[in-house]
Length: 145
Image (tube, rainbow, N blue to C red; front, side):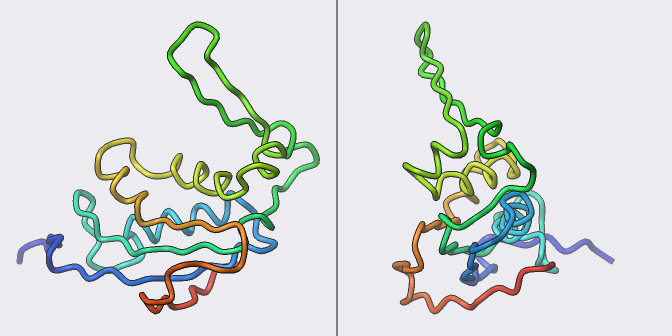
């Protein structure tokens, strides 16, 4: 008996659409990270990209739990120059780039290595309800409650 190891050439990725309206950011990010990593598939192999593509729409309508999380959740970027630390709150991020809230939440849940960066390319997030991936015929993904 041998353990099955998936090969990148043998795995055919599928496309899913997820509506993020009125979804909690962290709980939604867990399910998205599971799909783009491929852990929902029976042929999951940790060192091979077996994940599927995910198109997220209505990212501007996500929500956080807790009273002050819109103001206490921060996102930082450092330019590697003295004084180059830039920090914005979730509320400020929602006003300028609402899709980045979900992208950052998912990015923090995938491995920090070349495989994780490759898997993050399978995530497509849109603030509104329109997306550019109708040609791939994405299927609506049923979220777990």
